Image (spheres, rainbow, N blue to C red):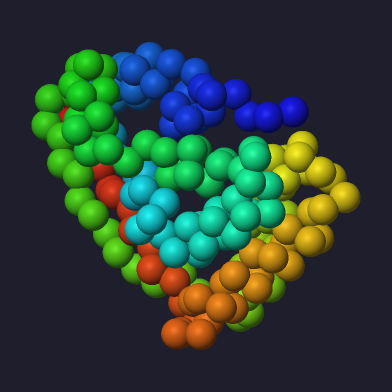
Length: 162
């Protein structure tokens, strides 16, 4: 079964309602801290794996990584949502780092078998999970591991005051 489109809504069925509830739980002047991933193209492991799997399932590529963990990154939208939820002072800071894994296969297993991406792979063809994992590992080996053993990651740390 495919993930519903609402999963792209940053894990809440109604994002504004969830943010309002976070604000309600704060005392006046309190701060709400959270983080979100930047777009998938700024997160190399996830991007390479997504592209590799798109080649394996061209008519219906698994898009969980781009849609859900990397799907709520637009700073204007984040500010608008927090404002609509009643937050006053909002700051968004980008944080860049490197993600490391011992091998391309270790990273591929983590993404393809250790996240909800697995459900999307299996919903297309459950018998191909191992093949998908190997394809992701090969893509990582040809890109990131050829240059270095780490991938660029980028996220936003958000502070919103009630």
